[in-house]
Image (cartoon, rainbow, N blue to C red; front, side, top):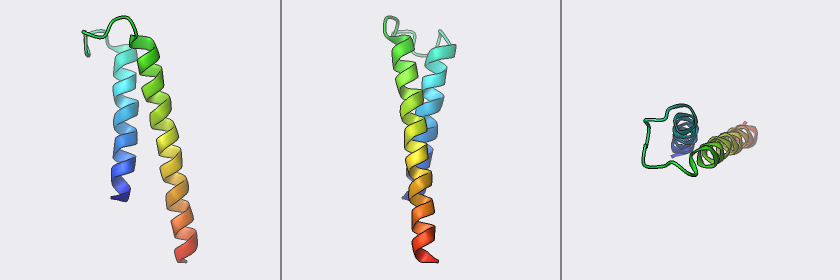
Length: 63
């Protein structure tokens, strides 16, 4: 389960980057494409940072 958070973080970053860089990816989204892409990338990075901090904290406690 701990790897699920990392995988989801990567998915958020990839989908956000695709929204920002590729016009054919989800072509239905037109008006809020850039804000949504930025939001997804930032959210993915924050989740990744929180995952890393949680893993480091659990390693610290276990040994």
